[in-house]
Length: 367
Ligand SMILES: Cc1cc2nc3c(=O)[nH]c(=O)nc-3n(C[C@H](O)[C@H](O)[C@H](O)COP(=O)(O)O)c2cc1C
Image (cartoon, rainbow, N blue to C red; front, side, top):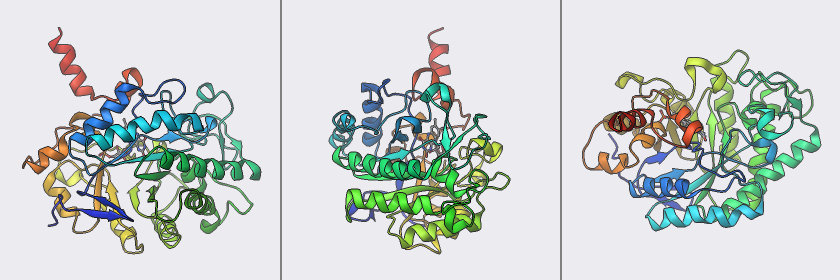
């Protein structure tokens, strides 16, 4: 069994332990996409709680790429100043912070973005039910450039790394998956052509941030929808990204269209934990970068076992309920108290990042 509290490296970035806060949409930005005090405080709390690396909730790289209301933006230069307040606060609290950047593609609503959602192909998005407009080659080029410019802003705002969102049915994943990509040009068809968008986003991002800045990805290993990305295809994409210089891969799977096989599954007992570990291990075999496994980690001992096979683990829901979980595990506690009720999603919509069980308790106490 490996020790959770040993350091590791993502490129030149020395990360003090093997626990990562996986990207978690906070619903705590203002209408312009700028972080509120609540968001900055929540991320500083996580740093104080001892987690090795914090990944922010997904931040949108272009206005039409927004995925949910009250989402943080990184689409304009004017946000560099406000975003710097996040990195300053996390660093002051002794932590490290990466920003996850995303284009939602067809996985959004026209009422939120003020136009028809765009994606690789003109299909109805299976999760959001809206018709998607097929991106032109010029739109694809502009979007690759928008990822690169957003990454440059992340670096300028003092973040320690940038994470591309290549999972959960968002735009990069939409290109990878035959279920959402039926293009007949160089961006669709064979698995290699479907991966081209992801590879070009990585290349443009690398160009924008330079060779030493850590660029990593959260990647679907498998979509769990009919006609979607298979594990074999997911492993090949991971290998392709590794060959092209990605600095780490966080392995996930599924998306809003995957039903029970979603990225945020129900975890009742130890056997339910780490549900993407087999996929992460398959990817670890073919890449030369560190592999982070996300999905359902709840017990210190299960994480310790997993660390024999992957480099780090990432958690989302347990850190919403217990931002100091890393320090608790360091002090010898065994289990997170998260019950994976997934009410955090509706709390986020209502009032911003919070635990449904905690909210219930508070409401009861207040009578
Ligand atoms: C409220 C909420 C918001 C989330 N937002 C994001 C996000 O912005 N980006 C992302 O990649 N995953 C997001 N996820 C998925 C988590 O990062 C994670 O992959 C998933 O919940 C499984 O990990 P867990 O069992 O530790 O929660 C979110 C999950 C929750 C519960």
